[in-house]
Length: 108
Image 1 (cartoon, rainbow, N blue to C red):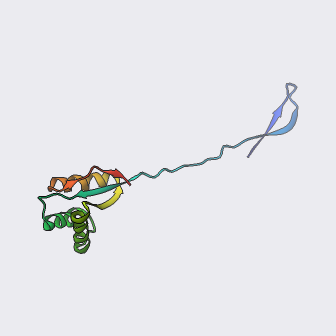
Image 2 (tube, rainbow, N blue to C red):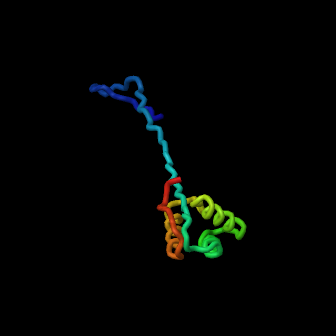
Image 3 (cartoon, rainbow, N blue to C red):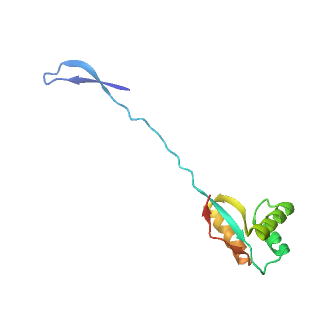
């Protein structure tokens, strides 16, 4: 708080006035995450799909790639990665260029 003395027109000090301080609040808004979704098709093999997942998705293990490939085949689609939009766009584009059938990016 800041205390100020106010003076009247005659130059005499009167009771102090208190100037209100603004509460400084910083509201941080997180960027939304996006889902990278691979769709089933009739022309990509299991080997190709799992190989692309391991090649383009960081940290993808062989076992997880095969599980996701099974999910794509039997359920029609699988979410293969969730994260920030810029990275999601990169992985989506790389997988699409490798020939995989991709769903449009979705906010998570």
